[in-house]
Image 1 (cartoon, rainbow over the protein chains, first blue to last red):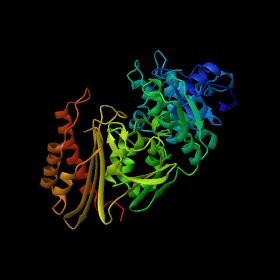
Image 2: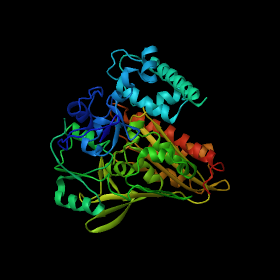
Image 3: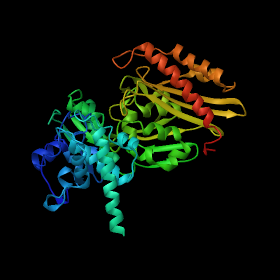
Image 4: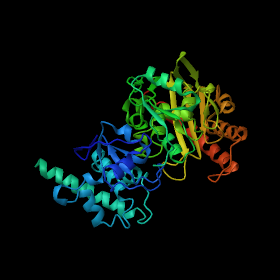
Length: 158
Length: 292
């Protein structure tokens, strides 16, 4: 499979979830595991561009797929992705445990809806649970990220 | 890792899947989107010997939308239905229901066939299947057969499917003529299972209700069709009084379960309110829907 632009492979038992494969076999521990049965959204990754819960997929099912995890967001050299910058600037995290899942869900949202309303943001992120922030700052962070990304796109097109 | 060990077969064709399931006997289980099955595996509530993964099988993901007929391959994901413009135009209740299934990441992965076969009485697809007077086509080593929506659900998480049968296609219809539809559900939070859900289809000729279909989720061990209320409305007006009477009939005739999410009385009350709102919405939608 391709993970964050690199070809990766491994051999695992069928019962190994994609989340465990990413963390234990590939060492990509940015993908967090909260509930491990599809409730909390912390393990959300992008599979061929679409958000999935990596605890609800078997690793073998991702054979040949393209994956993007939170490790694939920042640019070479460590420059944070605009969504990561916005979460930092707007205090969209406290303990940070749920953050990788929120970031990946937000990537999908802003790909699909570059100028989302607050309602659209809350709906799209409804599958990600955060026990620290009360969500308010997360919504502000997504609005800010959307604005920055739209600005970047506009600047590139100019 | 949390699931107990199992053998895994990534079937490349329907025949391969059927053969693997036949070999596995009662210990076999079909893996489609996995959004219900994998949590059951993780909690070890399900411990199949063999998982037969059908995701690679070609030809099970077609989505055909005619004005009055909807054909959905078993592997079509909820999200694909939710975002399909043809579905939105001709089957707005289906779009509305699909958008209320779990969360985006679940809808990206979960399949229509899987949901229909999982038979959760609070889920959207089984209820839609009843309201669309639908049927499922299933395959087994003995060939194909078609099961009507009314004959599919046998109890909580239980269908009349045999262990070696695979759902291939889900089909539904809407009546011809002037129709309106609605799908409403009440849940504590977005993406939660519905406490009660209602799918309503109303066809009128002039001011007279020609045909009505009402199906509810969350009010029994299976999704239920509210036949009494349907018959009460058919042939009469669709005014507020008639709709209120039909909603009361639904509430009177049901025997809902009580649990931590809501008592039986609460569910009955919610069902009455939702049925009334759904029927009013369906009635008011008539004339504005393009599905002619």
